[in-house]
Image (spheres, rainbow, N blue to C red):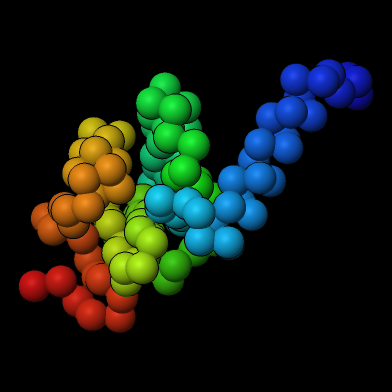
Length: 127
């Protein structure tokens, strides 16, 4: 097992700090990639990797990226939930790297829900 470097510890510290910031209300948004077996089989890893790259590339320190298990809608995977501060969460479905980039730009950064990819807002279905 390789030894941890100072840089590795700093990266871990930054990840934990981001999680605490969101809990305290300082984060702009939280994006949860649903990564149950069905999600992974449908391409959730590509979605997660795309988000990690774009968040890092754009220095979006106030956007928290996390994962969860299956959301119970296997046929709609890959899927993410976007939560903006003081707004109801939005579930996006049938995603591709191109779609998630649009969601990141328009919804997370711009505040406008991308309705054609959205399944539900809060517990309400999008029409």
